[in-house]
Length: 99
Image (cartoon, rainbow, N blue to C red; front, side, top):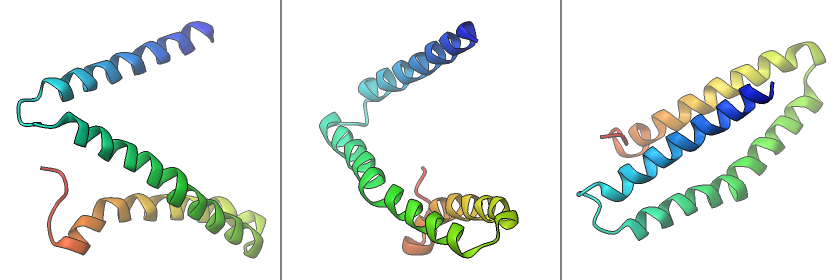
């Protein structure tokens, strides 16, 4: 278990380093500080808005559903949330966010 954990941490650190080097050496990015602010804003938005909203919705759903159907509801909400994140730019702006 210790070897598996170390391998997962090492792989994650390598991927993080690869992404950071790619971001900093990309010639199209003129102001890396703006990218850092955007990433920090994403973390802040997730921690201050998205996570509490999901927690509140799950708490409400758990109170108003039978114990047998909670797993199914959790799966449905997970898939619906992921689909909404991908589809939101198209629905709101009529374009794909990833270029």
